[in-house]
Length: 264
Image (cartoon, rainbow, N blue to C red; front, top):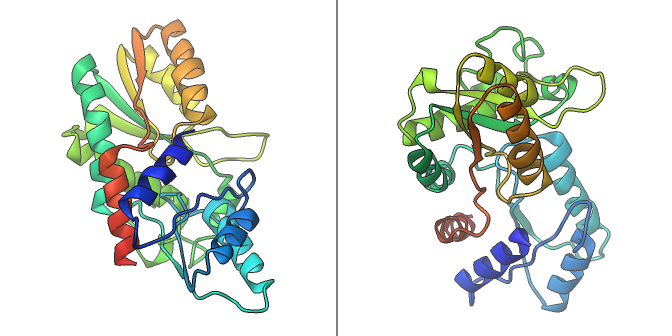
């Protein structure tokens, strides 16, 4: 619902400049169906915007690989421009902070948690250009540089720092964690479900959680954080947990994406 509404608002913002279609990597509408729709409109080039703020081979990489495969299945291959991950763009962190600020201010929270979708450590390490930087120290994600420019974890920490700065949060007033891990293989830390329990035990009573790896609210935000994490936090001694809404189809975000597309 949120993604469809966002696409409709973006189409309105870009009317007369771009044809806008929403496609899902593992759902409907599919990439194949929307490429067919665009070809029927006689488009002459394509601009692809993966709606993942941070890069990961399993998300951005997989979606682009599928798009390229489908494009090359045709006899005439459309020229395509790809918009890179936008985690470091001022528009992204500014818009997310704009959505978060009313929640932080209204509830006078005493701590903020930035919870990102999790990845297995081995997947994250494969993006290490040097083979020796990723997860080699506690400070490996303090900056994004040549060795970790495609590191999902480093990009997540960079996003949190940018948002915290715009929300005027002190360094001691927020932290970063990762949600939705599965199985026994090591996933990138720290784990959101455990961090939330620890914060309650440490005396945090009013917790705000933002999930900046998602540009639209879904089960991993609304159910996992807004319901289950909230219940866990209160059971462990916390007073209340508030989930910051995602960007969804916020007007400022629609305008920001339109600007990014035009720039590309």
